[in-house]
Image (cartoon, rainbow, N blue to C red; front, side, top):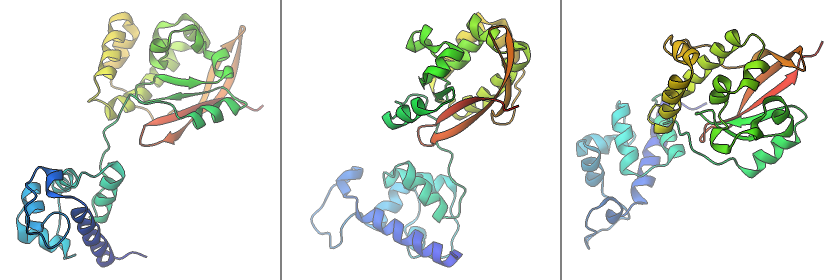
Length: 261
């Protein structure tokens, strides 16, 4: 079991390793000629991170001092940490894992696409904007994704503008607001992305129902459970769930399966 003392030593070692892997020119400083150790000096890191040399030295020595999330973000910037290294830094410093900015644009990995097509159930992959990045034949039969150009294959857009989905979801007036509340959680994670705002703005212009429900600010639990779908005039119950397949890219696999009797 890791103790607080052990974690402070891990943090100290991590900071030293990251400091030593950078050269002055990496952070816009002159290289100079009289450097006895590799990487940046402690005073350079302290200045770039906006803290005093003594305080940073104590941190790198593993002393028991507190740190703020703002300072850790500054340090991550100075050390040019990627997302995984940034999370590691926060956890070593006993801070909560940082909130990673949500990204809406990404490419579906080929392996995920292959596994999705091997599934015996309707399945598709969404990003935070609810763009349908991939789908199998069973999902296309159910939701008609292939009838739309790629730039319009967005589950939220189709839910409010496509007559097929309006009929497919039994009691659409009840199910659509529930699905919209699920989208709001993802919207909150990607509010810095212009394309997700463009989607909301466009839907407000074309769908009175969307505009009304969007401004009610309802938020429900993660999307899973049972949906009633109308197929060939019959209502069938489908269990559905979302599986995270790439946390960094914010991708999830949505799977529908007919409910067992």
